[in-house]
Every structure is written in C-alpha cells, then in structure tokens.
Length: 392
Length: 103
Ligand code: SF4
Ligand code: SF4
Image (cartoon, rainbow over all chains, first blue to last red; front, top):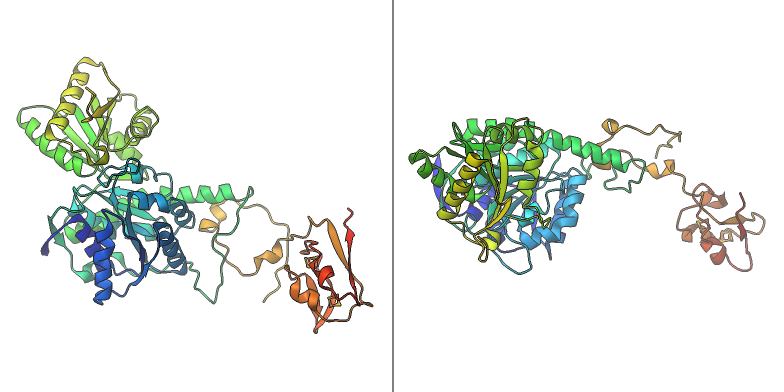
C-alpha cells in the first residue's frame, strides 16, 4: 500500500490516471480546473493513453463525451457549478442514451451572486437528470469512489457524478492511500459495451426522434436501469472493500446505537459532525450521525432503516429548493419516512451556502435543538437558515 | 442492402425495447412511410421525359425511381410533393406536372 499526500483534486485526477480512460473531453472551471489540468499533464507526459479533447465550453465537453461514449469508449470528464449548469441539457442526453460517463465533480454554488465556494446547489439542481450521485466526505473517499462509480456506471448503463466539496476537500492536502495501477485496472475490468456506434458490421442509430408511441416506454426502461444501480452499488462497494479495506455504504451510520437524535447530512460537514458526535457522546448525550453518500438513486430502504429509529432527525442541507419549504434532502427524506408507522420528527437546517463556514458550535446547536424536540415533541421552526446573519 | 418486409407491428412493452431508443438495424426509415401528408403530387410523363436525371439528383427525398440509369416513376410512399423536380425539369421537356392531391 502506497501512502501519498494529495488534495481532493489531485486525488481524483490520480484515480482518473489509474483508470486510463479512452477519452476525456473537458473545459476548466474553478474549483475543478486542477482535476483536468493535472490529468492533461498525465496525457502530455505519456502516462495515460487517453485522447484528451480540449473544447470551448462544458456544453461541448459533455457533448464530445457523449459522442465518444456512444462510439464505445470509456469516457470521463470533470466540472463544477456553472460548468455543470451549462452541461445540463447534455446530462439528460447522456443518461437517456445510457452512456456510462463519469464526472469527477467539485460542488460549488451557482450564480447569482457569483461565488466560487462550496454548496451543493449544482448537483442538487441536476438530480433529475438520470445520473448516479455520490457525495464524498474527504479526498480518500473521492479517490475510492471514482473507480467504484465507473464500474457501476458501465454495468448499469447509467452515468455517474462523484463530487467533493469546493476547497474544503478539493484544495486541502490530505493523507491518501492509493492502490497500484494494475489493481485498479483489474477492479474496473475491460470495457466491452454490448452496443457501440463504431461497430461497422452492425450499423445502428443513436438518439432518434421518439414520439408519443414510444418515448414513455423508453423513459420507463431508463428508470428500470436506475432501479438496478443500488444493488450493483452494494456489490461493487463490497468488492472494493476486499481490494482496499475501505467500505463505503450508500448511507453511513456513525454512533447511532442507542441514539435518540441524529443529524442527516452529506459531504465534508459529515466528517466535522463526527467530531461533534464524539464530544457529545463523551458527555453522555445520546446523539448520532447518518451520512448521505448516495443521493441518486435514492437509497430508500437504507434511509428508512437508518433514520426510522430516532425520536428526532435534523437534516442539514447545503442547498435550498426555493420552494419555501427547505432543502432537497429534507423534502425527499420526509417523503421517504412518510410510510413508516413510527417516524422521527424531522426538521431542516439549510447551511453553508456559498462556502459559509459551518462551525462546531453550529452543529452543537443543531444537536441541542433536536434533543429539545425529542424531549418535548414540539417543533418551533421547521426550516432554519443556520449561520446566516439576521436569523435566530 | 437487404429489403425489409414491412409489416404493421404491435407496439412493444418497455421491457422489450433496446436501451435508450437505440435502433439496431440499418435503413429502418424504409419501414416508415412518410409520403401521406403531401398536398401536391408530381405526375411524370414518360413520353415527354428526356432522361436528363435532373429531377433524380435534386429530389431531397430520393423519391425519383431510377432503373438502369433511367427514370421509371415516382415513389409516392416517400415523395413530399415539394415540387423541386417539376421546377428543375427542363422547359422543353416539362415532363413533371404538380397536381392537387385528392383523397
Ligand atoms: S415533389 Fe419533391 S419529393 Fe416529390 S419527387 Fe418531386 S422533388 Fe422529390
Ligand atoms: S428532369 Fe424532367 S426530363 Fe429530366 S429526367 Fe426528370 S422528368 Fe425527365
């Protein structure tokens, strides 16, 4: 086992190098620029065989990726924020054509106002596009998630996004355990798509017009492909554990045994919250943490099992739905828990927009408030904007 | 290219479909007759035709039927009635007339 010191971006670029994809088409954007910049160095230095396509926008980047993927290539790219927004149209085209492209993404807020720091509004805004989504809590997880995502994507015909938090993960140096190149190659295997456009013996048409008589059936079959992602994920994550010793469940529980209340959150904040849980546990408080790692497809049963046992749950959402009803994780989690006979009281804390730092004290406050809710059964505020001036 | 027999097909269930609306054989547009919304119909006069093949090369829908290098008629299963063939046909021949389609 090799141990390196790498930032989140370096870790994702390194994982891409070990995968050695056939094609990478990309356009730089802060804070994900480094991923493809470092990767283009690997290309220039002959460390990979990848055809690197430098394009004029993210719309073109993902379009080129779609073409290459349809042709039968193993394809990856990287982007963030506005870049993902500009890809939005093509996200649906990749997914609708079952092209297993992987995006190494850095979560950054969306304009306006313009900002380059972390929140999850970019990927949350794309969650209906038909891409698997994995939110990572640190560089190690980001590195590990890239080959995992690629393997699932190719097995299911579903494209995937692996994301880290802007700057907090993308630019912070961390300890990284890496696999050998050939171990990664063996894990992902050779990519042999059943159908590909450059099959000259058997010509095919990709992306034809599909009207009232068949569009709905094709969408239904796309949803069916998605229904196999979670079980494939569970298998592949176990396989990766055997190889690396590191296991990442779709929904992670941390010190939930005997807990009355829990925070449900994603990304780097989950790692911070673990520290808080440790401290509060030492004081004898019955608190736990559940981390959301996969948000597409929704790990419905896992979430029910993880959250159903608490008296009160606070979702911490790093984006808002502009529905005046909290963030997306909150809304969807409420929907998931609705069927349970005995369900926790659930409230939402929208936090950290535009990279606003979330302090230990903020997380302690959330635990204090939900502990109070668990005791009294009374919710004072369903949705709280945590850490914003002018709010309680 | 093999000629595909056209049959009126049952609409398939989603489980039977190739992923992503992938069409797995070539030249399937032959299955899909698109000449039924024409309002003007080109009528070709074999006597007047001087076989210059201008109509054949300009028809946007490859609907001028040619055998052994000679025009033999018009494929009404695909012709859209655009009139380009009648327009391009040399005035001394005027072998194609556009007439109103009546159904
Ligand atoms: S009317 Fe138009 S489509 Fe029809 S045969 Fe003439 S040129 Fe072709
Ligand atoms: S353009 Fe007129 S004359 Fe020339 S081949 Fe066509 S029908 Fe005949």
